[in-house]
Length: 62
Image (cartoon, rainbow, N blue to C red; front, side):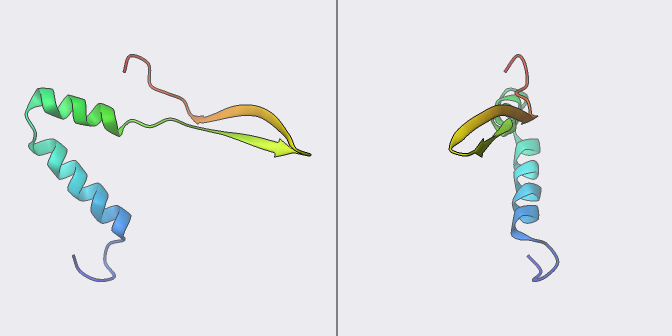
C-alpha cells in the first residue's frame, strides 16, 4: 500500500471487494449478505429517549 495514497478504510474496502469477487457464486452471495448493514439513531433530551429514526433501513429478504 502506497503511503498517503489510500486511507486504511479504502484499502480494506478494495481488498474485501476483491476477495468477494474471487469466491464461488454461493459463497459470494453469503458474503455479500454479511456486508449489508442497517443503521438507526435515537436522540435523547432531558434524560428521555426520543423516537428512533432509520438512516439506512434493513434490507428485506435477508
